[in-house]
Image (cartoon, rainbow, N blue to C red; front, side, top):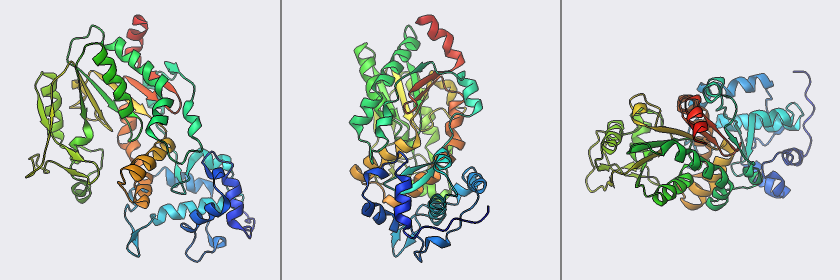
Length: 398
């Protein structure tokens, strides 16, 4: 790697000036604010000159290795407080030191990482569009739009209204596609929308409800998250959040079949703040718990992270939509939604969990669903893909 350039005396000022060139919100901070944040991740001895700066190839290898993410601790503690996992902290210290020492240029850093100013961390960029995904989707987008989410580059958190407004044109065109695919189709129709948390699935569901109600079709929404088992139980048995073992799978499958057959259902209810299910791991209602009643309808709309991941479910679904928003945008949404409003997580726990799960979830289920979906929506890149299977029917109905 050769001799290192000596780290400047005022490390924080040099790092501040360089990170301000990234579209991350750092430029909106005063230097003293930046220094407050940097103190939370500085070496225990405060000596930035002692930080190891690995070669870029070592960094790239690490962030593409699932074992790196699997070993991240969600709730490490120091002095009875949750802290940032040490492997995350070490990686970020190396990146900070490498940037200041001119070992890592900002082009390389920005290619592989994005900087979240509220967590004050670099997180690896997740690859969703593999060759297999692009082959399925035909490589070229069906529709392209203005990238309105670029206005969020320096936001520290993204609220519901701003996000919904930025995606409005894309969502309206997605509705048009759904209309073409459902016109003259016998009911009930099951539409499933998959995608990462905070991608905008809930916002889109409002448009879908409005569209079908306006067109005199009844619609029922089923949130897949309500089928999650207690988080503590999932953690105890080591069930990944994208596995059959993490949900009341038999109840979920039975619900879809019953609704497809025009039957009403009682489904589990999940407390999103305390992470408890109304049902025990055996699928029985807990004492004193309440459930959700779901009526049959012309359109059954399933929303969740992975509604068409499992082969037993895929044949039941008529239209499979994957709805994606880039990780940096989703993390900003989660700061606003889960920390500011829901007060759902400890901030360091949120950072640890988000850092750990994005790569693993993409590997476990997001790319798999992208490879079989009918429609793929990317609100950040501002385009809509359609699979080869439905391209011709859509063109025929244009």
